[in-house]
Length: 68
Image (cartoon, rainbow, N blue to C red):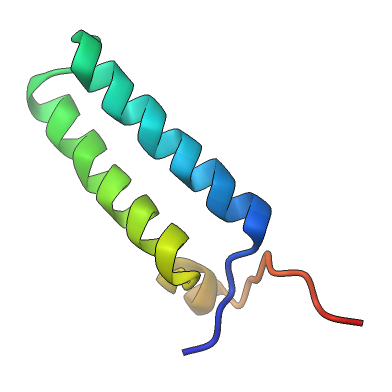
């Protein structure tokens, strides 16, 4: 499995997960919206840690910088 998620993309994904968690914690989101946001957060967290995004792979996109 080849990595296609760059460092900045990983950091942004982790920040988004933290914002979703905070929004749930303070009560800004709840119910079905919270469950959908949790699903997005799980996918973002998984792709941030593995460095591989299935959607990027499917579209042929990579945010990883190429070594010169």
